[in-house]
Image (tube, rainbow, N blue to C red; front, side, top):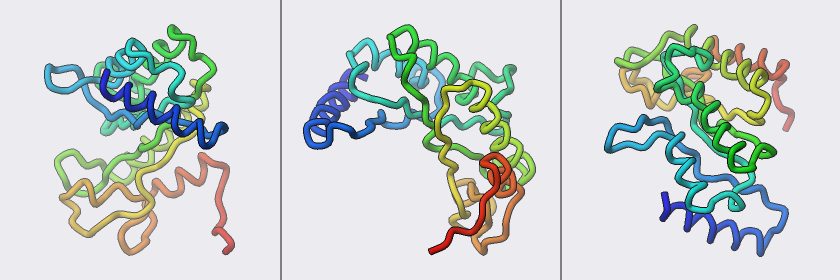
Length: 190
């Protein structure tokens, strides 16, 4: 944490020297639990603050995956990164950063046949619930869905199956969930 925070501080100083209005995010923290080899994002953020990161980022970036649970499922709060954003927010407030927003810089769930994959409908439910939680919590300003399109056809490889559409562009229920969450979408005009 100390080494990363030193890098963040140096990078933010350099960026602000060249572009004073730039919005700086920390490197998106990934889901984990404190287990002796991994560090939870809750613990990591506390360590960043302890190492002096407060003035080095403008937005807190987190990858709040929650699958197979819904982001709002309090019964999974010991590991559900989306639910644990509340704890990270407490650290932000305790460190005088209540004005900073949170960006979910990578969020979604994999479909397919892999051991940790979810059904297409559960993927849609997870994404819908994430958008609903962002509204309820009020400090999650952006949600970036990972990803628009599946990367391959191997349904047993979860990394190939995060898309809102399949590799051949067949929509999954999650696409409609995103459209509904953002108030509808039309095809972009180029």
